[in-house]
Length: 252
Length: 260
Image (cartoon, rainbow over all chains, first blue to last red; front, side, top):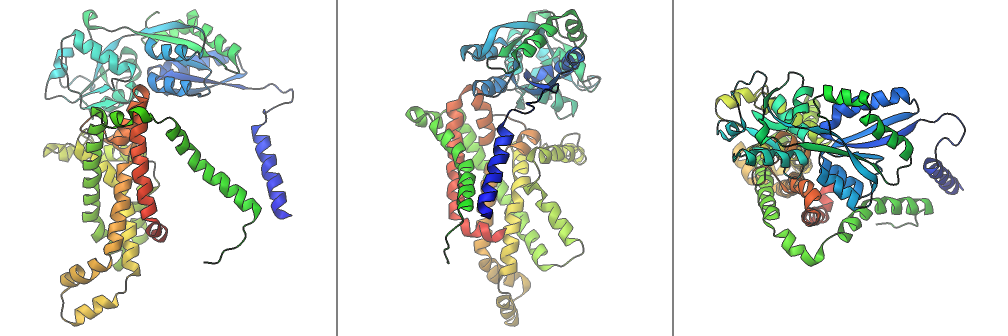
C-alpha cells in the first residue's frame, strides 16, 4: 500500500514537473535562450537588459561559449531560441541542419588586436613580435573562430608563431593574458576594451586585419519565435547599434 | 548472501537509476564510426593525445605514490591535533570542481601566483607545460591513492610489525619488509584508481596547464576540442577512456567498495 502510494506520488510529481507551467491567466515571464559567441558576453548582457526594458515579460538566459561548441550543441538539439556566431562557418552549420528560421543577419563586425599586459612591458609592437622566443603566446584553438582568425592574421603577416596553449574560446585567451600567465594573445578589439585596463591592446595594421562577421538567427522550433525575432530586430536598431559601437564593434 | 524478493518500487527506481547511466553510453556507442574506427583511433592527433595522456597519468601516479604512502602512514599512525582537518584538506579535490582546483593551482603556482614567482625566478615554469599537466592530474587524483592506502594501513594486523621488532628489526626494515608487503594490495588498488582518475582529468588541466597538442592536450581535452571538428575522433577517444575506466572499476570492485 505504502509502495503504491509512493509510486503514485512520484508519478504525480513527474507529471507536474513536465506539464506546461502557469496554465492560469497571470502574466507569464518567458525565457529566451540565447546561444552567443563568448566575444559577445558584454554586448549581449547589455542588449538583453536594453530589450527587457521595453518588454517586461522576457528574461534572457545566455549561454556563452565558442561558436563551434554552440553550433554543435544546437545541431544536437539544444533548446536555443537564438544563435549568434562569431563567424559565418558555424552559422552555416546551423543553416545546413535546417535549424535557422529565415536567413541569418549580420549585425556586427569585429577586428583583431593583440592583448598584452597593462603598459606593454614586453614591448610588443606587431604580429612579427609574436614570434619572439622570450614571449609566452596563447591563441584560441584553431577549431574556434577567434583561433582561425588569429592564424589568418599571422599568415597574412608572414609570421610563424608557436602558441603555448590553444584555449577553448577567446575569453579564455583574454583571461590568460589578464592573469599574467601569458605575455600576449590574439583577441578581438572588443575584448581588449571590455578588459578595462587589465590588459593593453596593440593594434594590428589594416593589411593584416581579419574581419570577423557576426551573424544572428532565430533557431527553428523556438517556442518564443516572435520575441526572438524582436530581439534580432532590436540589435539592428540605432540604440543597440550605438551600444555595440561603444563596446568596439563595427557596423555590419 | 541472503537473497530476498525486492519491493516492486525498488526494482522500478533501481531500473531507472541504471538506465540513467547506461543510456548515455548507448548513445555514444550508437554514434561510433565503426567503419573508420581504427583510422580515427590511430589518426595523428589521437595518437599524440594518447601518448601524452599515458605519460601524464603515469607520472601523476608515481608522484602520488611517492608522496601518498608517507601521507597515508601519518594519517593512519600519528594521532596529531587537527588530523581530521588536514585529511579533509587533502581529500578536498575529490569533490571540488576540478576547474576550481585549476584556478587555485594557477593562483599558487602560476607565473603571477603566490609561489609561482619564486619558481619562475629559479627557472621552473608550470603553466603550459607537461609538468603542469602532471601537477593538475596529481592534485585531483592523489586523494584516491591516499584514502585507499590509509584504509589498508588501518585494517592490517600490526602484530606482524611487533613481532619483527622483537626480533630486532629496525623501523625502516620493518616498514620495508613487513608493512609494505602487507599493504601491497592497497597500494596497488590505490595506484590503479589514482591512475584512472588522472587519465580522465579535464578541468584542472585545461585551466592550469592550457591546451596544446603534444604538451598539455591530454585525451579528455582532445575529446573536447575534436568534438566540434572531428566528432568521430572524439567518439573513438571517448570509447578508449570508457573501456579503460570500465575494466578498472570491474577489476577493482571489492577494493573500491571497501575503501570508501
